[in-house]
Image (spheres, rainbow, N blue to C red):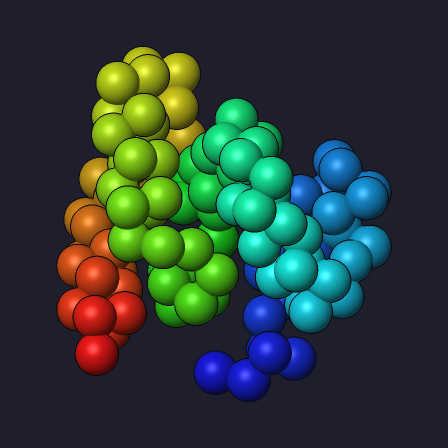
Length: 106
């Protein structure tokens, strides 16, 4: 998937103009910057929201397998988050995390 195809963030973060207005490259750089600075709270919120509403195909490009798995665990522990997540979607993201883990090892 080309970087220009990464555009789910524009729809997922409709209520956060600073994220919505970013180009795909800027959004990817922002995620990397959060990792470098150790801003795990903000990164976690972004990954969780992406898991709830975004494309798993884009998610495995943007996020590490352990970040996706942590988001899935947090969603499963939160009854409020589970209201917005279809179990089929969660299973798809679990598979995506497994794929991301295998893909990144190569």
